[in-house]
Amino acid sequence: QARVEPSAALRLEFVDLSAQSGDAAERWLAEAAVRPFAEFQAPLLRIGCLQLREQHYHICVVMHHIIADEDSVQRLWQWVLHHYRRLMAGGQADAVAPEQDGQYGYARQQYRWLHSDAGKQAHDYWRQQLIGPLPLLQLPYDYPAQPVQHYHGGHVPFSLSSLQSTALLNVSRQYRITPYLCLMTLYSAFLSRYCRQSDILLGTPVSRHHQVAQDNPFGLLFSVMAMRHQV
Image 1 (spheres, rainbow, N blue to C red):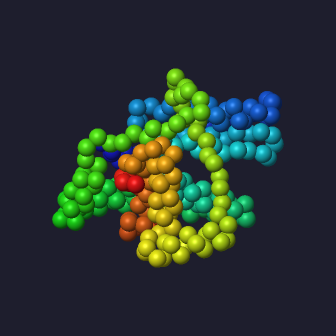
Image 2: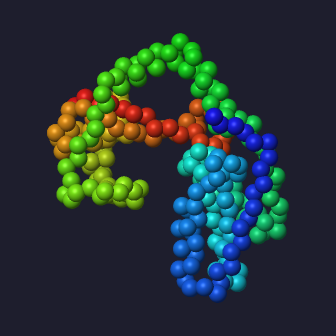
Image 3: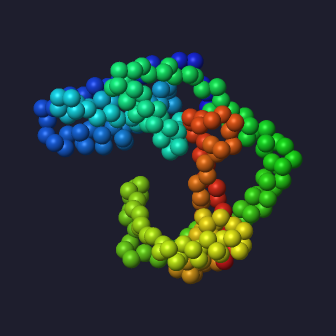
């Protein structure tokens, strides 16, 4: 159960690496990124300042994933850079106003919606969509799977030509869907043929920032929607 602490002390960890080798900062950052937090004890946030040489510093901010999503982290860095430039120009930084809504306001809003008639209808719909044994994707491997699982994933970048992008937009308009949903349909068809399965379950990230009345709320307003595709 989430709770809001009335106050929390945040310590800035200063580390002098000016006398160490060139990769000392990378090693320190890698260790800080995987260092676990205490059992949900505030603050779920760590800030480090690394001095590499005179007048050359790195700022490291490590957050528990339960307190902020990507949109919120981008907002934080925009705020920091904006006020850093103001300070460098001889100005002053604005005081940080406490969040009045944020993710907790969204949680209250979502709770009310889930108990409304529309929320109950949506609950029944998704419960029907995900009924029964859920399919597991049987990916054919080139090499045997490692005995110990890890989170060191990869990515395969690709791009669409101008002609392909135009065709994608035309198909999306024809069926009145977004290009994202059109690409997901193509991806589901690819997985179906590649894995020889007709029942595909995919997760898609969804940001909820636009559903909160407050402008640019800070917090974890992110969820993964499981979408089941019958190909």
